[in-house]
Image (cartoon, rainbow, N blue to C red):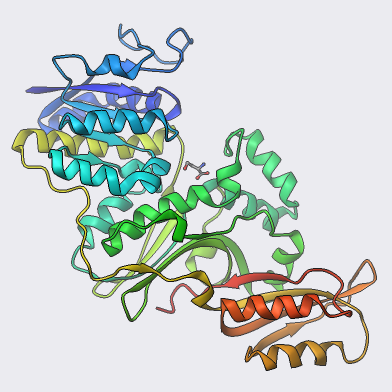
Length: 433
Ligand code: HSE
């Protein structure tokens, strides 16, 4: 049986998970793949640090360059995180024509075009199942299982921390700060949860999925990203009254032309939609293909074990490629699509919450402004609660271009009867494709 010698860069949560499960499931792995993967070199930031797993006599090194001495290992795994040293390491491995597995979503989102080009020109296979949705095999699904489909849309909950926070806000009435503190206490959120909260962790994964689905590497500067920090307990309650749940969604869609939409933001979705039932730290990806119709993929999107499972799958793929020596391209570009539609051109329903003076004629004035901008009203509620002397008006609005909605919000903000900046959220109907 061929032994696959592996060099691992990074031994944090996920790296340790890979080492542990590869050791534990070795016999199963060998009988299923016909080869024996063995981690023989490890690079870590702090070699002297005490670890909870036994490294079977391997002495970790501090510099990843020490992994690259001759004879080179058969396979490299990058689980360092960050985009600085990880980029240098990834380039160095691919430039030598060696196979590489990475779970680094930020690295691929920012440098994917360059790295896939390098992988193709050097014939160096690049695997990245762990870079989106952790344990859900979504990369394989989009690239291989659904290869005969035009992907019409994907709606994805791909940040467990945000989903946990929104779930706790909805189920227990916590406010944002309390729910975030809980997420940190239980170790779901990073100690610096910035990328979880501002939407960019989900956006990195969305860029990878959208690029695979639509055949051109998406420029992260063209992706609209909004985090969950503006969602209030009141929004969650009013959404609930109207029959909706608020989720942080990654929305990826084809349009009738060659544009696609890629955006990440909180959105109201109907409580009857299956994504509404995705609670806590779980992830889910709903994909609508022109042949297959609706599909749903659900599971743990983060954590050492779920992410290690994705890396183990990539090791098996790398082993098969090492044996047949004919790697499939990691990313196959095509020109059926070619542009991310600018956010202002995107048409959507919207939720609008206003703090207004409780006076006759106020509602009529607001309706008149919306009507003038050609924005129709779908429903209105005015609960008998007053916040600091103002009444609250909550409106669901018919489809409008986002630019019009922004214009309306800005005109409304200038009205003397409107007491606080208008609060706008997107409303999404995932099955309407
Ligand atoms: N912090 C991410 C999450 C996992 O909460 O889903 C890593 O991308």
